[in-house]
Length: 292
Ligand code: KIV
Image 1 (spheres, rainbow, N blue to C red):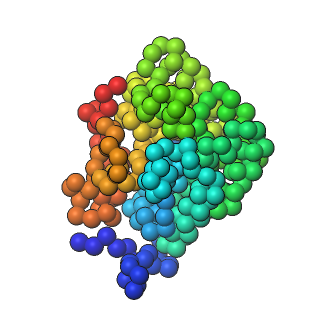
Image 2: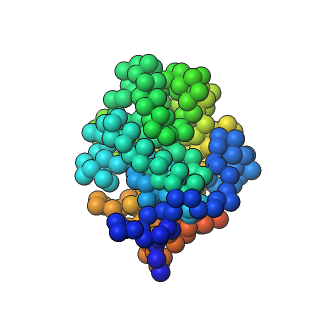
Image 3: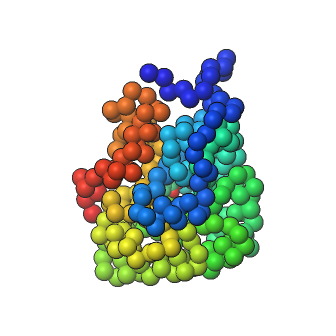
């Protein structure tokens, strides 16, 4: 069975220029509606036009141009070396891919390391670059000091997704890629930071590698900010995975919380569709995929 969603060209199969689309564009109100009625939100990373178009066609609601592009596409060992220009390039490509198929996905782009820490003004200038490349929302890592940056961006019309728990840009300070907020004090701090980020206007919050119980409590508490889990158990408002991980083509060691959706699919399009179905019906992740 073919992976293609468009017609063949001498350079490979590209998405069609203008296929019919029955779906409405995903917007902030649409995401809030899904969140309010408890329908799981689906998110995957993508870094190029073709995969972005395929994810959109599979019904993925949010496409994250993650700074994981550094590891996945650039062969870096961490996200620390990813530049704003790299993020602009990939955001532009993903945005074009989604537009090419008249797609509906909500595009989120990561503000890379060093592009928002210096000042709120630096964050605004960097976010502007990504929004002008086609992002609908930017994501930034960390809590506490980021709260005022989030407020500053949101007040200026830039939707923001926050990111707590394992924040890969600070991997050196954290001492490695490990589960965060396991203990009482660390969990209380993360909760307090999450509430502050919601109050500052963050509409989404990625929770990476935190205990499932903590993610479940926060998901129940945060009414205006949808939690998106990655290695955070099944209770979050939505789930995200790195595309190459869920297709089983990662260069590094596969994180424990990943399911390889290609293992049982005849092709990429079917694997993407299986991911959407599994998140929507709550069968991904199952409890065996997180042991913290
Ligand atoms: O960069 C990325 O891919 C991410 C996800 C892991 C959430 O931030």
